[in-house]
Image (cartoon, rainbow, N blue to C red):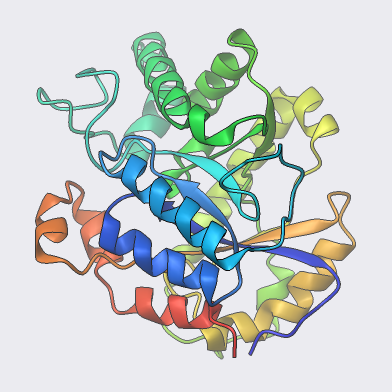
Amino acid sequence: MFLRRQVMIEFHADDYGLYRAQSRLILDCIENGRVSGISLMPNSPHLGECMEMLAGALKNHQRKQTESASAGDPYAGIKLTVHLNFVEGRALSGPSVLTDKDGIFRISFPKLLFVSWFSPLRAEYKAALEREISAQIHACLPYFGSRPLRLDGHCHYQMVPVFFDAMMDVYRREGLSVSYIRIPYEEMSIYKKHGKNFEHDKKINLVKVFLLNRLTARAERKYPDWFRDHPRVPFAGVRLSGSMTKHNVDLILQDFETLSGSSPAGWGEMLFHPGAVLEPGDKRALTSKDDYAFLTSPLRAEEAEALKRQ
């Protein structure tokens, strides 16, 4: 079970606001578990009503504030992040090279990598990314009030070079106040000593960690000023992506806590996906096959249980 510790770890749940029923499962992890941060799905038609649910839940349970917030902030007590989403659903900025003719996202991570380095159409893709990133940020701005923005990406798309460049250009050009960008760099040392003890282990996650760590190095080289002013926050959630179960988290938690406490940031982010999509209508509405497999997996319930207080 999770123990109360002095070092701050943000237990973070992605994909809030995708659907009402799915978001209620995340709310349960806020009310009865360790979730202290959530990422908002900007292009979901259900986001507004899900944010009303969140405000009501936080008010009813009188959660202790964990960050500086203005008086009357309905979301005091929970950290909010814009979950830039180019995988699931419809683009807010309309059809483009990132979507099909109906505006449904059809751009893969490998395709954006190719565009980043080899395609003569990089400028066209970057312009489309900038339009949609701006639209998604502005869809979430009303929920932040006086808080600075925090940004991350669905399936970590924010780390693809052309996407990272577009995101940084939008934030600078529009003069947005951004305090945090998720950098999913993982220290493999916290996993190595546990060898084959992880359950539901997927070796493809090793490839993901390697790639995202390399993309982090590229971002740090290109944007040294950002990383100087915003020390990289220790992160866990890719090596065990999809299987952040109680058993697996217990194996790494102490080492992750030590890593977080000794980092310049002084805290760490541990990522979970406790919001299962269970309603038949919601399942049918999913537009990404990969998201369907991930979000309907029984492991979503196991991750939710890992976050519950015991």
